[in-house]
Length: 291
Image 1 (cartoon, one colour):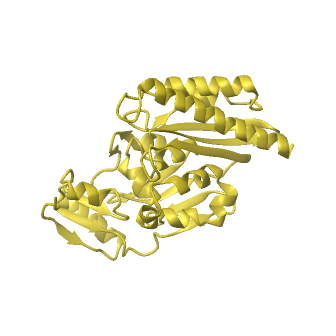
Image 2 (cartoon, helix red, strand yellow; image 1 turned 90 degrees about the horizontal axis):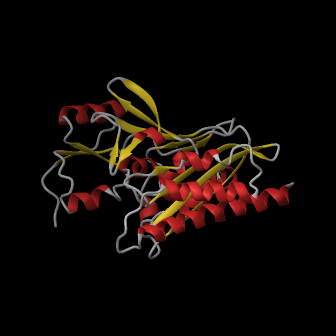
């Protein structure tokens, strides 16, 4: 199929882009990487009156690490650039584990982290990573900037809290207050597929014990699942077997998968349990070696 008719605009300033969206009164779409939007247009699941291409906006293609260890990732930073970032590889193990399994190399060359979070696909990878890391999204609109935690940003399948004139311009991973550890695992039917089930875990340690924990799941609910109770079960633990098993049990309970051609609901819960346990066991082993 071919997309329906739409106007195309390529603004050179952020305020111009916001103004175009405001005039569209909710009928406009923002184009960054386009790896999700273009298929929707071709299938006519989306039929905007105007497509606002932000690729010519200056200064949005950055990956910056601040002096305190916080990461700021611009709306035009591609998956591939994150994959090649030495800072991500060295300082953010959860993101580093996730990015090589985001779709395929072609998609990673154009798609963006910010766009993926905004798309809010229940089987997407980045929203789970950002929730596990307590990340946030910065939106820019007629009233200026506002910061939204990703756990509050994604409200449902393909739904987020942006108002129609707003543009998400940045994702932020906050500065850690302890030693960072984490991981990401997902089951896919073939390379480049969406997750049948997946888990992202971000931890911080102080004096050998967990001082901050985040666990988020993908592919096992109507939206990205924030497994808060599972993360809480790890607090102040040294990742002993009891704490790891308890967290895996609670993560599986937090999931709400549906049986489909990818597998039964029970099978997907089992995968969640296995992945959470496997990631945590790997982190525990690394901690023992470093001690």
